Image (tube, rainbow, N blue to C red; front, side, top):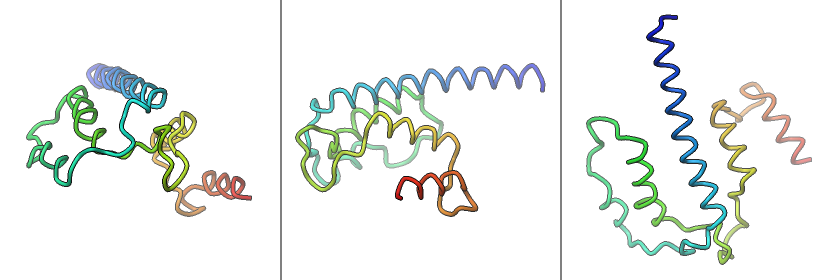
Length: 130
């Protein structure tokens, strides 16, 4: 492996760690203070789409800009199922252990549709449901 490739991988890992920490900090704050958000969104049909660019950007945006859009456009356009005043449909599904489990599953890119594609996930699911 070349020195340039090693530097690039190190830089990519540092950027990933920085962005992941910011995202995890956001998640921890959200889960700890979901009461700050309205239970039901206050946006009207078309509001979210109107707040987004009609075309994708020519070049990638910074993670900070993406997370800012997430906080300012996407989050206000959601029903906040984790809100302590949300009593409809199902019990809350977003919990710290659940988020961490999803993070690990996403990192491994687990395709848990069949035993052949993911024996460990299939057997763990079967044991959980027994």
